[in-house]
Image (tube, rainbow, N blue to C red; front, side):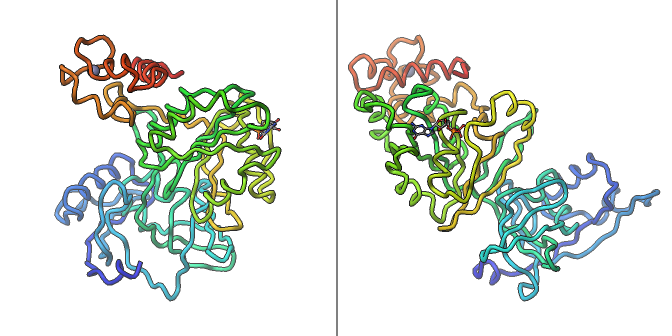
Length: 380
Ligand code: GDP
Ligand code: ZN
């Protein structure tokens, strides 16, 4: 933060708009921001005579130019930090964001209009997970600045990126050993989504009290051998719950996994205060009532947050194209450049290094099968 403040603050000439401006003109504005970071004063839009309910005006904004897709904003506006508080956006509902300060107070915040102008993507001016500075006013406030984002979990909806939550550190890939049975190919899929979002996965195998898990070891050790962290847990006996708790501390973790694998039970065991409803939400109601992917950060008493939201639990963020799949398979990756054909799909080609590695046991056959399904677009 301090480092950023020392950077030279620049003046940026911006065109401000009333709310009634059309979307197409907003994206037009965004385009011009992307190109040179400023708005051309002589542009026809700038000269436009304001109509009813519309007004274009100029204002000079002082701030640091940031301007790329990951930060979300073209300019980081200068703010008076003696008046503002830093906080974390727990959730966004309509135009209001709930912001939590480090000492645990929450404020219902509106968003400074200037931020909408500076936002590269006007649909996500503020997102759950954002680190912000806001001007407090009683129990309310106004967000003055959004810090650059990292670890963005998003979903592509009708070819547009939809931000679900920002500043995520890790994803808990939760899978039950039994009831429902372990589905290793689902783990494969979750790992790809995590890799694609640049978020560290932690594989958590639940309900290990229900069976002798020795027979699962060969399947699970494949993940450990690839360098993934994996924990066996039981919410019922408390086995390894403390280890998961330590892994969550001071991090922001998204919890992903099928319905019924024990996500809520595990989180309740980690932190009883969360009191998440277990086993109540049926898949049907998740589809119907909870179609939104609105994320909610739940603060943990040891520090850190978990994001547990019906809409993102299934982690259905699948927009990987077949040609990308092999690149996300850590075990296949070393072989793909050794194939005879540079565009080898590793499905049916001759002289395929991947298939050779399967044949002599250097690669796990189950993983290869999973690759084939994913390459063919089977959503398993
Ligand atoms: P969620 O849908 O992933 O949140 O799963 P729940 O936490 O609601 O758990 C689904 C069912 O599995 C419930 O009936 C839980 O009591 C049960 N369950 C969850 N964790 C465990 C565990 O570690 N051991 C056993 N035996 N049952 C568990
Ligand atoms: Zn090949």
